[in-house]
Length: 100
Image 1 (cartoon, rainbow, N blue to C red):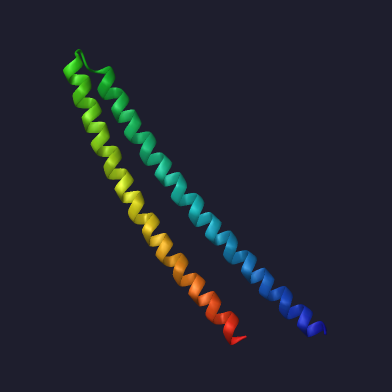
Image 2 (cartoon, helix red, strand yellow):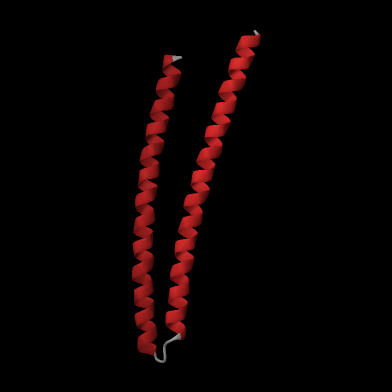
């Protein structure tokens, strides 16, 4: 009985550690994405502040839109990779449950 309790405790501790690592990875990824957007917005702000006419503002907007679209596409690729990994983890977990 004590052995079973001890084994359960070890497994739950390992699972909690893995979950904390995943959370840390997700937090780092989110922070990096936010930092990228902030940097792009600062570039856009300085471009707009340095203009003297409507056409220059239009050029700044166009450049900002292109950069934001590029960032969105990069982040979309990361999301697709994460989703693929999620499916793999799900399949692996399901296989583990079947084997037990």
